[in-house]
Amino acid sequence: MRRPLAPALLGCLTALLTACGTTTDTASAPTTSASTSASTTADAPAAIRQGFQRSLEKTLKMDVTIKAGNQTVTMRSAVEPATGAMTLDMRTPEPVSMVVTTDAVYVKQDASDGKPWMKLDRSRLRPDGQLAQGLDVRAQAGILGGVVSAEPAGDGRYTGVADPEKAIAAASSDAEKATLRNAFKVLKTKTVPFEATLDAEGRLTLLTYTFDTAAGKIDNEMKMHSFGEPVSITAPPAAQTEDAAAEAYRFF
Image (cartoon, rainbow, N blue to C red):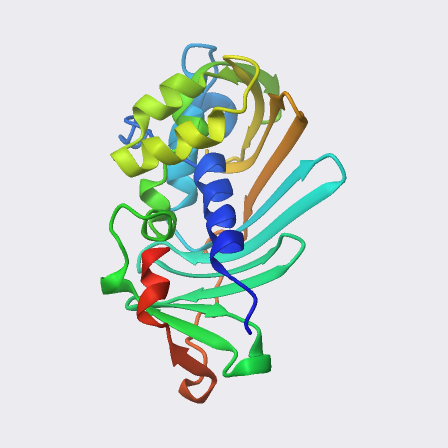
């Protein structure tokens, strides 16, 4: 029997949807240094949100770390925003690997009972499902959508507060709203403190925030880097893949 992949993969996508985000502030600001593009407290929230958009103008890599008690989840991905292609390697601590092309999603699975990669047809994914939502990096709605205040801290760094309810309201679809509402319902407080860093081009390079829950604190960190560098995103060899069973699509 193969180990079940859906819970780990969906947990991964929930984490990414919560960490990243776009908002209604989609207009591009002039390309200037981070220190001048958000030189005032009033400008800072918009600059941080727009910084995420700027980070997606070219290829990039993303590193996400989530710590809760003695458990750590890590995700490493390479993204090609223009085509939607990406790779993702995750440890939950169970490893999950994924390759996304324009027409398929390949998920690495336990090879003890067959071929190592399961192939999902992107056209068969539920548009409102977490997998389809998670694959659209530009459409992700997360904590950035709820940024309500930010203070410059020097060297492109900002400290501020996000409102989870505003983040939910800023989500672009009912599915995204539901994902965030489910993620945020464990919070003990109505605000989430965060720190963000913009580089000299105004791109978001670091976002950290902490969820205070009844079970303890959950520390989240997202790093974005390697902008514009070549990324290698190719489908696994056909001999190593098998089509997902029909029942697999009920999860996705």
